[in-house]
Figure 1 (cartoon, rainbow, N blue to C red):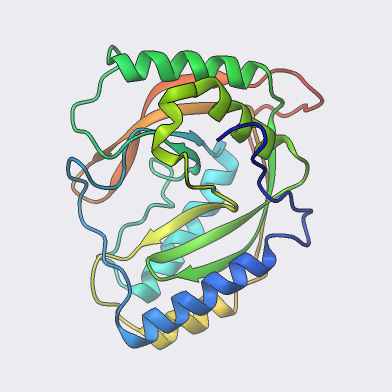
Figure 2: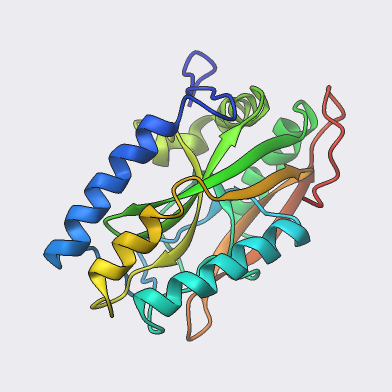
Length: 247
């Protein structure tokens, strides 16, 4: 992602709302038709590859986990609770397809760690207002609204610093910020009930999260769901932000 590429910057009450509305319609239709996407444990060459993410702070993680538990009670207990504290995250950029056994000494990890440190040092902490849930063809999301350009500035700077290692998403722009709370893995216990449950929470206020550091991570399947395995952590520079990542 070059510096000339821009994401949409949204105020807390506008901007991304239309994109989340479109996702809800697609998710509702897929869930009611029974043709929603069903995730499966990561395999080499598939999803859940090396990524840079914004991890939620403890308070935010607790709020997301509570809503995730409620969602699973409607969707069914066999789906992945990816809003649990050990899994929740806001993806900034995926760097490759899933590759098992990635370790800190891996050449890509070393290069990406350096790029992450440079990018984060040049950017301020990220602030997201979490307001509302949406349904997608593959799960349930918590919707994030940047309160200033910091999140998008970091995403663009990271792409620049990665250089050739940004190839994996070179033709793909992530234009919304979100945390997926539930990934569907099979039939839904109550499809109509799930649609209604999410619809009633389209404006649920989950507070503001201030993220003080970004992470490079891989995903490990723990028998229940993919969880985060941190490979590098990079604090944001001071900029104009004042957050500590505890939201």
